[in-house]
Image (spheres, rainbow, N blue to C red):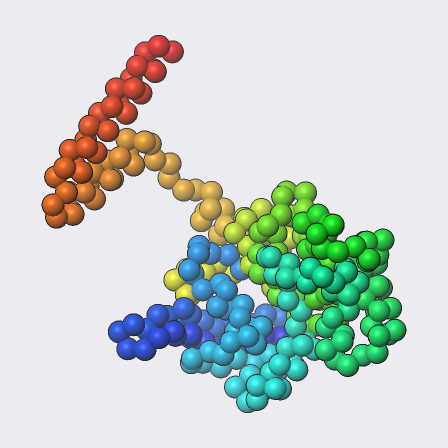
Length: 289
């Protein structure tokens, strides 16, 4: 069963000649229980896609359904309630409230639902136990490591038992150890039956996914099913097989650009001298070695 269905969805910002196409007729279906990685260069439309799927924004054109419900028919208050009860968000910058303890941060979404203090405290404590941080429930965010803060953010996202988890660069501010901790935790959550959609620039993290969607210029250019533990073929081609350039190539490119700029003779002359100096230095180093 598809939990997410987008049909030729577009998102435009601005009007007339100043219009910017952030999403260009994107069609995407995500099945319940999938672990989907979304990749692509900056400006490719990843965040816009996440905002639309997460009901934080609405498409300019096209159809979007979540759990079989047409989003266009939801009033703003209905969309907010549906977002609160159905979707859990994990952000790159954690977004924890600094003056609240870990326990209070995790319990906050339950307070918005009107749940009593005793019940929401117990439920938040159980969720912190699930992510292995029950012994840190009375610590403040500044007393915790980056990986621990992100795990608390994950616990907060899960406390309402959402059907869909949206993680936008969840390891972007973490070191390698923290990144592995967070991804292993997301993997465990996926095995428990949750649907996860996460954005990443790190090709190695696609090893945790069951599917990789690659975006470029507002469109999905590749959609590949993958095996857990393997980097997607699309990602290998796009991220690893990049032609290498030398210093001389880069400087030659700058020279060619300067020739096309009116009134840049002085800059061109300086660039040519810089190129010759680089080449001479390079020859001397090779000769001395």
